[in-house]
Image (cartoon, rainbow, N blue to C red; front, side, top):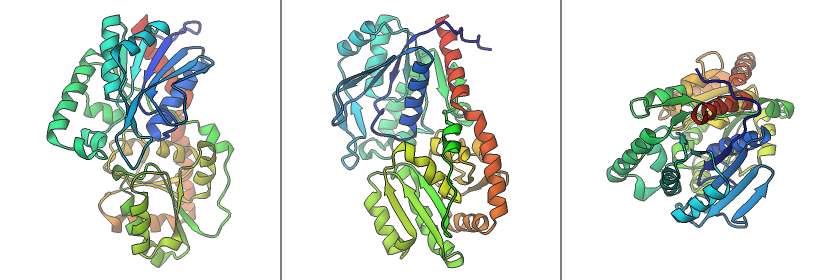
Length: 388
């Protein structure tokens, strides 16, 4: 068991993640919440990330400093999806300047590789969080990286990093079990969700429509097309159903076109990227939250839907799905390639208000296991164990 963190013990922690802000997917939000909470507890946090348009290369806040390195976009249609390419001497200078005690990696990238090389020379301990379900999850949206040769190289690098890092952290117990043979020192730290924030701003659906909600990147691994393809069957039985798709990504135009081809455009709203402080109202106005992804580590949007007391319908191919969705208790699982099964389960819930409310209460109850406090308590204990 970990020793409890001493309240007066504060550390200088370096968080390494190419994706920080303004690209606000689940990974970034999880890292940002982690950084902000560590700062609020008195730790000093230094973030190494990629450059983004209109953002300075160095940003300083209370207890938080962000350094951004030259970067390139790996997806032409998603310009904020960028990887950093620093020089080792630049990273070493920052690590020494900020007097870093421990480095925390969040993405297997060139930035991580260079920072790890610098940490080894400076004899600084490292930990790594695995945010991906598989190698396919990491490379699915990068055409040149989605092949056997690249996967082999990536796997070798991840294995080497896991062997040399002090702890491999996983946001999902199932994911941790899947990688256990690889990681010598596995730790479980769930992604944090602020359930009070989502409950505080609750606003019930005031329309007569039955509303389905999806939030996430509009990219291949999210499998959004299956949700659109299920809509004609749903509308046939419940004509006043409306689907809200929130997020941005390179599939935006093709998904809008698919909705037009299916003659469901009037029943689908694409919101684009929504500011985080506006998300609670979208969760609260929906009747069901659906996540049809092929891959996820521990989806933050699912935790947010749970914190918003929502009934869930989630793809069974997500490793962490069975941890977050208890069949017939707070939602249903479905085969992500079966639009008929998806439609049937959505119809079942939309027709049964009592069941939706029952599932929603159970979701909120389960969400209390993933609070920001509990998550960062676990993380602090890992840091304490390594640095004591």
